[in-house]
Amino acid sequence: EVQLVQSGAEVKKPGDSLRISCKASGYSFTTYWITWVRQMPGKGLEWMGNIDPTDSYTNYSPSFQGHVTISVDKSISTAYLHWGSLEASDTAMYFCARQGQYTYGYFDPWGQGTQVTVSS
Amino acid sequence: EIVMTQSPATLSVSPGERATLSCRASQSVSNKLAWYQQKPGQSHRLLIYGASTRAAGIPARFSGSGSGTEFTLTISGVQSEDFAVYYCQQYNNWPRNTFGQGTKLEIK
Image (tube, rainbow over all chains, first blue to last red; front, side, top):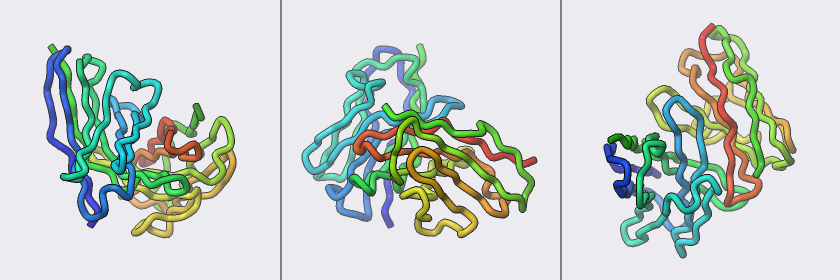
């Protein structure tokens, strides 16, 4: 079974750094990209960026470029989303998803989500 | 950036009725359009990709249509478990992507 399992909920203060993870299983990790999606409380989905685990090539939405970093560790089939300095507005649920290439660029499956709360 | 607009924001239907959800792209995305379902407190499930292909395990009452800039997700005979929020996503300019803002399907 193809699965993406995300790390647990986090509560942080403004200015803190944070890395959340997304561990893949059930398929060859380098065959598909991993994408990250933000969902703020009561809001819709925002695509943040994605990464090719083969060579760590990344793409970011302009809305998130420079504020987050996406990375992978191929040896443990895990993708990461990293913040160097969190803001209160980063409070949201974050999802990872497996993404195919080109014609197969849809997201399937999704991780269960990681709640990030940033509060002083 | 390609902007995806979903309508209506909320759709109220009775169980057993047909639900029709729309998604419009600001420019052509060919057939590179997917639909997802999100139930309260849950993650997202792929329903449709390629505008009209049902994902594995998706019931036949879900169907997708359209190409270019206009797309429709139809649920024929809505069941209680279908009340959820539905999102469309374009992947025509892969690896970049955009989502619609979602349509909430609620019980009438």
